[in-house]
Length: 152
Image (cartoon, one colour):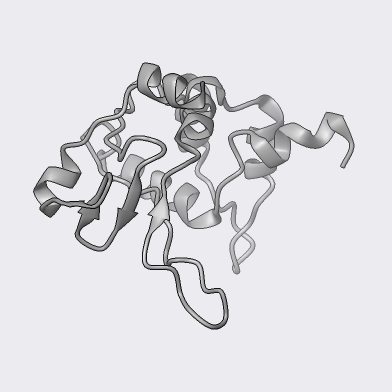
């Protein structure tokens, strides 16, 4: 892929259509300023044919944090969104929503709660095999410093 197009595969639009249309729904109904919760997760443990892994090791949080800190919507992103139409031929995204995105679309108010990088994670398990409740798991917070330390 040409380097001048990399921003389209790693930038603001590196998401699925559902996220963008739901953001517009939040905006349309005045919910865009209210706190919301979104998950970043995997759906299943690796399947190796003869067996399926019973745990995973958390990794990639640093990449997510970097992406959140640096991703901004560009005029080209807005033009691509502006060019989308629904099945009736009408613009998929409202001009007011696109104007709001241009003015405010960044991730500066996002807070992250996550299992720290490098931890073994499995059903009802966290860390080095110590059982923890779901409530305990939800309260594990990873900061940028913890992530940077784990990357060495």
